[in-house]
Length: 444
Image (cartoon, rainbow, N blue to C red; front, side, top):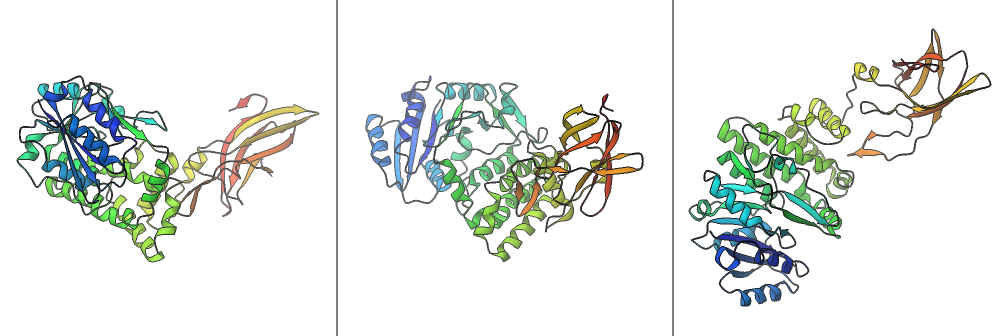
């Protein structure tokens, strides 16, 4: 069996040697089973020298191609063009990442047991700056298996590193290539367009793709959000392209596609990402993006928002956008508020008085500056003095979606007022009765 491993290289002098060595030292015989295709995408450092030294050592196994810079998708396409005609599998490795030493052995074994599968992927593990498994590794918990995307819509895949394709499919179909006129998501679009055709892929659980989280990664990722093409163009040319492909093949937006895109758009909501739009886009461009963003999520069933593994306030924000459009409008259900509880964190009595501290913090509603908590005993209402709770604001596109600064209280009560009910009066004057409390016995 022959693996053709495509590695795009761009100013990777610090890392590319490790990537190459991780392939040379696989448990399969390197000279018999592996070819490495190094595509230098216009590097200006010593990457070229390092790559050429390896070509000298392994002239029958390593190819080096230099080209003017055109991006990783175009570099991978160049790699396709240099795959040996007798290759069995095509794999992808980024120049700063590594494969576990038994990866090719495990992948080859999987393909030999599943001849019908055209794509197999391996779990991804971060290393260097952080040391954690990727959040999508739940797909590998059941061991080696086949995921059918029409049946298991949560089995989504994005990352081209650690993907292995049957080579014949690409050697006989030269039009199967990465889209080169988009700056972002070209790998995810390529993979998932492929999956819409083939409907299934394999997961190889014991191999490992080591994904380097570089120390300087934050600045690199941040720079991506300063590109205008990350906004409206990404929705139209990436997300909607995949949606239209799904409609073309299946006459619907498959649950798999809905779940996948919903998972990915959470990146726009991240605290470090979402404010950048106001620096990058003009007011007109912002309005255009928000309109497209809302139209996008309104295409999806809300269940695929609710099922995401993301902070609750992200879900609430997306659901409100889906229901109410832009500008953002909070949609608060009185019934949901009334089910929440005021929490007492400290309670003691002295000299015939109770002293209590607590807060009204929950996932459903956060208190505004002019909201007031109160306690009600029969017909008597007493408003509670506020106690500031320090904490980070959560702001998405200019709207405060979480702020617990005004949620705390501290007060004293006569000893005989041990039984009462909490309530909240909002800045609009609406009152909601909350949980009942008996300080002598605890919460009822």
